Length: 429
Image (cartoon, rainbow, N blue to C red; front, side, top):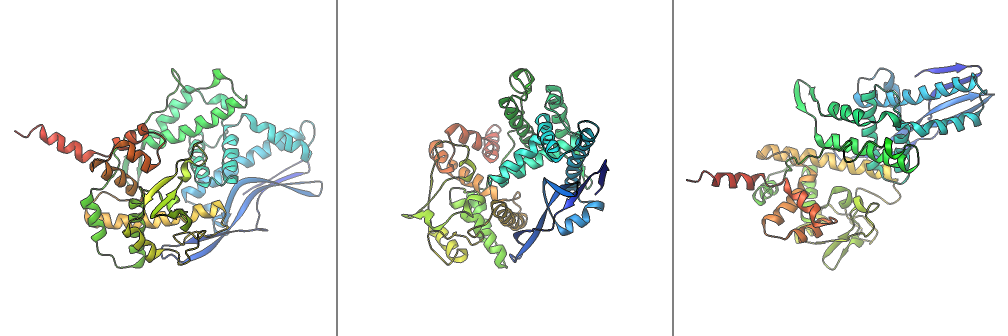
């Protein structure tokens, strides 16, 4: 990482090891250890004093040491983001020293003002705001979208005026082109393209609301750019396949627990793991589990409380793997603990999901079933109910959807098996 000096002003990229962020992480053997991460900052030295500006990026000591010569894609992208921010710092120092003269106050004002027309800076501000609000998953998703945009632009800054219908069409085309990894060529997902461009639209909406762009500059909508949608096949298991998964012989405690967590998710109205691992014993009442989806807490005005019947099989899973302390504020499953920062919570939940996906993929491969993941539990719950004759209204209520139309769209991609049976009827002479 370089330094920059001009007329008595020295700027550098600074790895601030003065205060570590102590983050709990569990490995595949469920051994919890603590990972120390430190913030990367931009340090300005002027008139005998240091001034610091956050890059919004935290790294471990090993990642920082590996950064200059890394071949890891994630670290390469992170390095490029850090360098992009540093280029802006350098340009602003040069502008001030050759103009009105450098001062920390003028630098801060220009840095803030110069951000107004930058899509990249708007993304960084959005990520910072989401992180501060505890919306770590959403912040991570916006970071992925930003990484994609930076790769496409060659790490150059992107102005709001540059985001035109033509630019969006070219970017979408780039997102959807075939890629080759380890000798295997595959088509990129329309869903991924839809999500990344959806993030850009959200940023553009905020820019229009704040007066940074006007209605004529807004590139989305009818007769402009419309985001493509996909109706790809979703994976859902039959009851026979679920029974085969439950009957499959496992040997380690980790494998058994992973399958039990997956099964609990299926039985508990297809609850996602983020909601499931945040369940507390106070959520159990009158033989049912009550919860509100984390996904809709900040986006839906009238919150829907979901009620799931506490089946005996779920009670058994809680007895095997649940928190021994059954106080109301105790988490049912002992992965999270009180007082964790949202970022730490997210990291732990993702570790549990990754481990569960790995073990369930092993089971599905052994059984010759399409790859099973944590989300397959939700798909399967909804589809088994539909096949049993449950109404769309009931399934919608159980899943916590805002309306039945959402549920209809959700179920539309599941019934490959049903379509295959119907097709056979066409030739049943």
